[in-house]
Image (cartoon, rainbow, N blue to C red):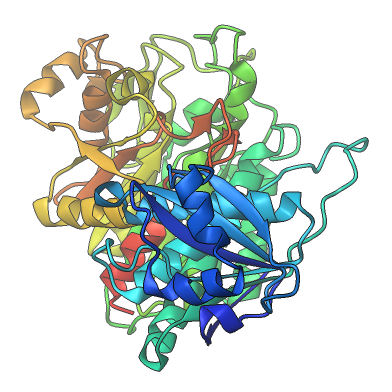
Length: 501
């Protein structure tokens, strides 16, 4: 879909569908809608007065213009109560709009900026949110459905309408960011939707190769023998039970100055997690194809940074492997020596994500980074603590955590900080090694973060646990059923903010 921006009065826009917003509990029409209402013979006001359009959040009412306007149809979108409208409410509205436009078979739609009188954000941010909501609202994964119903007509163009000439530049910047961010999320969702017999560690490496070629990003793939030479005991220990060769993937995007130290993103990339010898229950185990969400999101973020030409140096690290039970699989009680020399007693092979991340974090330190961010579907405890609407965050640097929190509010992918107190390490102490890989039931998300903290040294670091948000059991306005890739836009927004681009 082509996204564009132009300056034109709303009532003069020629399009298949003109999308306009309305608030709940406000019957008076804004001045920008008055010309539309006059041309339509008072239909907009009448819909308000009869209650057919109340403005409730996600309500959508379609009107046929019947030739009295250049636009063929008007789509009224409910934004909810004025005091409750946020950038994310705007995203939701545009996700709803896209689905409605596609449903009626239209090929184009246009919309003025929504909620400019309530959302305290520049035009660029509102434009970005609108494009993100629309593009993500259109996500579908039908790759393996040979008998799929007749595909819906493709929407070719989305146009954002500027009311003033001085809005156009900012809106174009926002639309470009929104497109890159949403496309990165599409990309991550696709990777996680593919089954594990397709999206193997080798296939993930191929996807990284495609990004490297398309965007001139440097790629290094460390094979098993390279990992053995370096002493990546965590990575190799998790991979032992699988027939698929592990891949340690490193992408380097150089958008900043050569002397600028990079930021490093590390994503857990377990392409299928059976639990290993500590086998998971069979119920919902098919969802473990998405245990690579962190790595997919890092790939998406690198892709978006390169597409936007952000002025920042970014390294993406993906320790990619399966976690399977097999004759050579790591057993409970085994001891692994990690890349940084620390030893870990494996008491539960289903706590494998922290083992591959530990080697990823230790390797990240070799780049002398400004900071390290890791992202992972790490713990069931995160789901218990936060449900499905917040990403768990732990870290050792207040400024870094504050920057991530701000990006989360902007992206609508919010984070919630948990404590990282040294007392929690008591739960990880082992009688036979430097530490063990589980800390018991209490504070499971925190002890997992505490484990990872032992592999970052003094580097500013944030850990994002996306186990609570990575999968949705239902369709939402711009969030798909199944793998959501929530966390991708958080990373992209954080990179945009940090780069100052």
